[in-house]
Length: 313
Image (cartoon, rainbow, N blue to C red; front, top):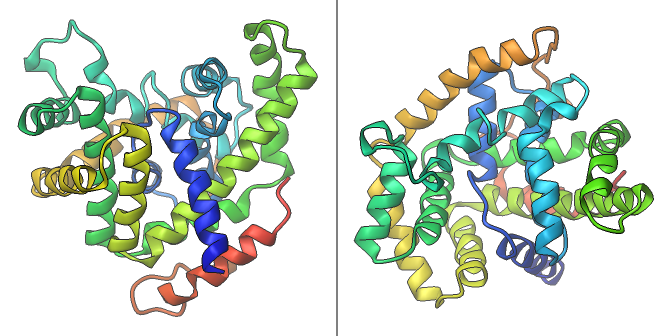
């Protein structure tokens, strides 16, 4: 079991190391749940699957093409609970916009959002690049949420992976296969379909491993994030660990207020974009385990093993 988990974890590290990422998975779930007032596995799944381009092998051009579609042309998806979650993540007006504002060079400091302030501050304090500071800032949010809210969001990550089915796979293919083929020289629609299917399956596995680490505890989560940082940032483990811990302490006093604010901003935007979509509260098996409840963290590896053995659409 442990060798299996570490083998899949290595795949997660290589996938994440290949591409810069924005908010972590737990952060995305927190914001979409708060923005909509709903806890729904399909919606939560959508909020994470926008990043499925991270699993597009080692082809930077391909990752960029898929990421452009999922983050900027998200409205190609037919309206659904899954699509509403998917849209909450977007880089036009969704959650990712707030963490990527620092990319823009012409925004006066007086108009910076909280993430931009923190990323610049961390870059200066730690003498690192803005790209490195973004990684530490966003992963600090994940550790702080695990510390302050327990394993709850990790279980929601795992429950969301259970919701992934043929309907979601087909929706993603229908929305993105043709435009992907049009943008990749020499790629047919059939090849684009195979590429997207592979990205979906690989990213689905990544979510399972990440959710397991999150449920296991803050230390296990931090170990995974340090390992990912070593690959992604190409620096020593001790440096990643120190900078990540520094970012956690740097943001601990005021991070939650900002996540709540972004959630509030997203609420009317999601309502306007998906006025007829209804996502009922729905957790698999009718339960939402938390600290001390019926599904302790010690059972998480068994849950993940069952997920790994479950056929993926």
